[in-house]
Structures are given as structure tokens and as C-alpha cells.
Length: 144
Image (tube, rainbow, N blue to C red; front, side, top):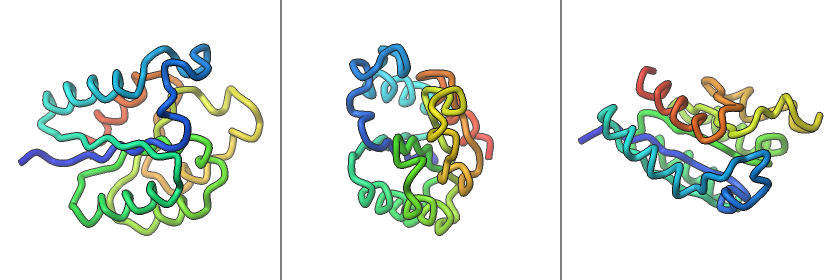
């Protein structure tokens, strides 16, 4: 059985492809999921991709990732990145490595996006490469 990688996506990421395409690109979350599945198979991994607009679901899924023995979690917490102490604490609470993922470069955007509570707890961050950010994070997950 291949190693499992959770890919968790937070609020508004269900709108990818139509939401601010000049910032987030034209790829939908389904487009990204398809590329991740293909690349995961090449790496001998399995991807479980999920999205929720609810903070508690993301926290529960982080706990579940550890309970299921996932190799890593790729987490794009969306706007919760900058506001959620609870998600920060959940990332710190699990032994499963978490890689923070962002389509855009938060440091090149509004000042309130420059602080990442998730990044302070995550193993690493991949940001600013559009949909490629997910594939780069998957590569990192395969190597840690």
C-alpha cells in the first residue's frame, strides 16, 4: 500500500478557477487534484485531497492524518493561515509533518497576509508558484 499524503484545503479554495484568477490562476481544485494524483502515483504515493470552509473540519482532518499514519499533510489553510491559532495548535499537536502550501506569494500581497500562524508550526512552506506549489510540496513530502 502506498504512503498516504493528505492534501487539505481551507476556505474559498472550492472557488479556484473563478476566484481572482489574476492572483490564484485558472486551475480549479479538481485540476490540481488530477495532477497531484498522477504525480503521486509516479512517486509511489496516494493522495487524499479534501476542502472545507470550516476550521473544525481542517483540525479534525489533521488529527485523522496522524491517526491513519499519513506520511505528510499538505495544508493550504487559505485565510485561516493568518488568523487561526487553533489550526496552528493542531499542526503542532501532531507528529505528522505538515507542509504549508500557497498558490500566491503571501509576502508580495497585503500586509495582513505576511504573518502565517501555520508556517510557524509547519515543517516548511511552498508558496508563489500557482498550482505548481502543490506539486513541489508533494515532492518535498516524498523526500521527508
